[in-house]
Image (cartoon, rainbow, N blue to C red):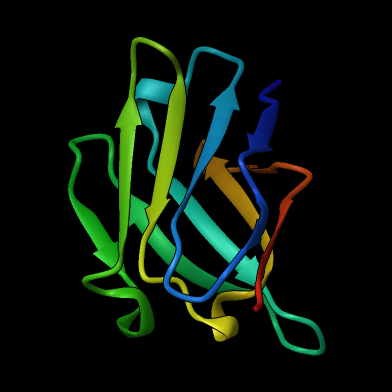
Length: 115
C-alpha cells in the first residue's frame, strides 16, 4: 500500500512562488515515476510535470520555464517548485505514482493565485 500526502499549497499573488511537497510511504518510491497533476474549477485534471526514477523530467508547455519538479529518494518526497505564478495556475494539485498495475493519488492541495 502506498500513501501520498501533499502539502505547501496556499494563496499567493501573481508573480509569486510556492513549493509543493508530496511525501510517500511504501517501498516503491525510488523505483517509480512521480507525477504532479492539477485540476482547475470546471476543468479536467491535467498532467503538469513528471519525473522518472532516473530523474528525467517532463512538463506541460504552459509551465515550462516556471515550474521545476524534483525528488529526494532518501526522504521519499517529490517537490514542485512553482515560480512566476499566474491566476491560471489556480487549482487543486495532486501527486500520483503507480506500480504498473495500480495508481496511487494524494488528497490534493489547493493553490490559489490571486491579487
